[in-house]
Length: 156
Image (tube, rainbow, N blue to C red; front, side):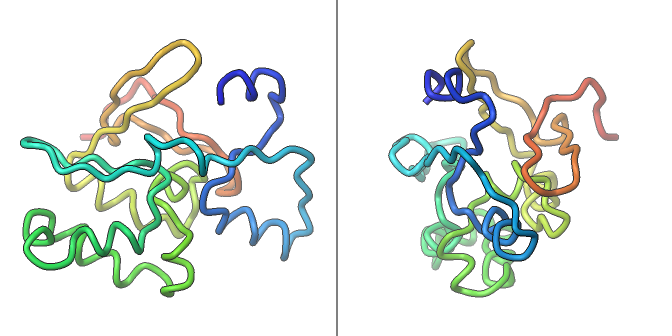
């Protein structure tokens, strides 16, 4: 994926595409190069570990909702309560937490919950990986295609 991004630096990454389709359909924005993240398996996984719940950035919200159904939802009640309220079922079938954070959507319902849970993001690039608390990530831009960037300040 990083090799493709290096060859196409202006490419737009596509996972759920809910914000991208709004821009395309309502604002008539055209994207010369789209790179689908659908085949990046680590972005599609959900793992319950002893001390953490790992959610791939490309996991559809409806899949996450199913994971948190029943007893598992009691472990993360705030997240379990958010998901049924998150837009419509059709949107939840495509939308992802990764996209919700990564596009800096003004209707980004995921960020406050992840902040409250003390969540961390694993950010990856061609240069490596690092974990960053959600509170240390700024989401600049107009809410249409901005990418998360670590910032030097800590929310108090």
